[in-house]
Image (cartoon, rainbow, N blue to C red; front, side, top):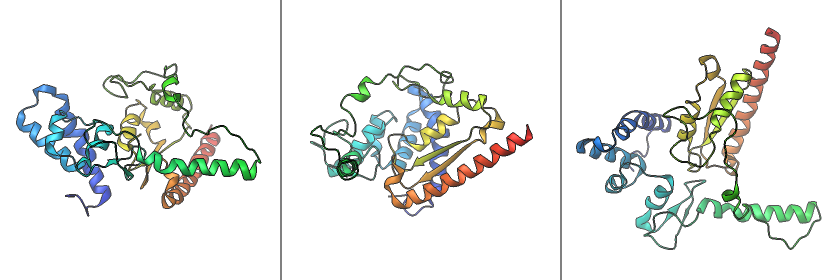
Length: 260
């Protein structure tokens, strides 16, 4: 890998700058992007992601997380995880468009089911022949994604583009305006492809807060996937970070109350 051995923070800052700058500008030009720039941007994206340059160009410089998970190790007939991209698995074939399942989900699901049954049996003395589903069949499809609160995504920002999820970042901003003492800690797993950390950064940078409220949002990052607590070292750091956040938020709240 061309970036192996680089300082992680410096590398992530470099990729952020590319995503916000040259990459965004290139995508904004659409079909009007000159061929030479297409080649240059495709080479950059390929270098950062590990995907083939030709594939990036065939995807019109736009590669979804699902397609990335299928394509990255296709030559090895391996797919990678959604909740944690460090998990690998094999699919039914290597020619499909998207992964057939999430290796990071199947890799941990058995432990969750076993732990629950142990708890029910040993602690609660409860037995049942019913099947326990960590994720209920059809639940996501039946979820009501209608947005009823807060504000709509700002023009050109937020999670537009036909996504079915309700825009809840606007609700958070609405709550922060109405309660200026509200503090927010955004915790992010660097290997999470379900809620990628840059998406979170982007969304929280576009909720149109006044400058005096922007400092109420803090970010922390961990060598983990979506479930930070699955990595013991990350869990310990997470506990320390949350403890510090609570302390700062409480002290700020007390200061604000006394000032009034």
